[in-house]
Image 1 (cartoon, rainbow, N blue to C red):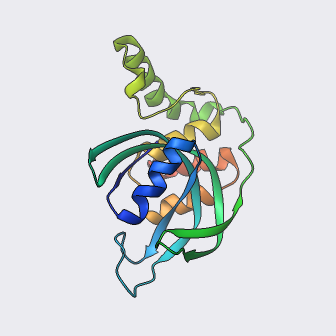
Image 2 (image 1 turned 90 degrees about the horizontal axis):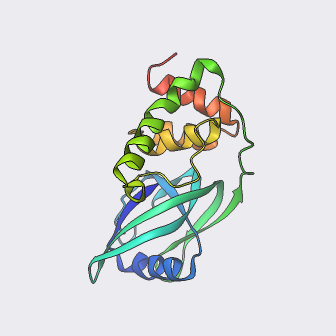
Image 3 (image 1 turned 60 degrees about the horizontal axis):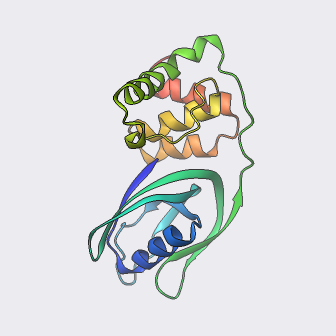
Length: 182
């Protein structure tokens, strides 16, 4: 789950259209530059990103959207350029979907906080407000690693390491390292 506040005119139409049509868009982290467009400044993007779908859109004001998105596939960003309206467009290579990999015994405890979160929300009848989307796969390395990566604070370097790691078990082990759990 990725929550975004969209206020730049160049992205308002994109987000509105993607929400209406159910089409995805890509999110890539800034390596250098600013989130808000500055004339004459060309930001540099990190090489890995994630394709997302808009799950919820709330117009807080006419030119301010709060958006909840669900990640779908990871990608490598091969090239990018500013489109005619300033919306960045890129050529990407999508990574294949993660294979289902059972969580080994030494890492099963990493799924426990997610399980407690889901159980608590289920007991309260608030699963629709979870920062996770179904299906819940607490026994799968890729699903648990990706959900933890969405929930824990990560700097851009760590986020890039995780996005670039194609092996779900290795990705979960990286999360364990980042959490200081060796």
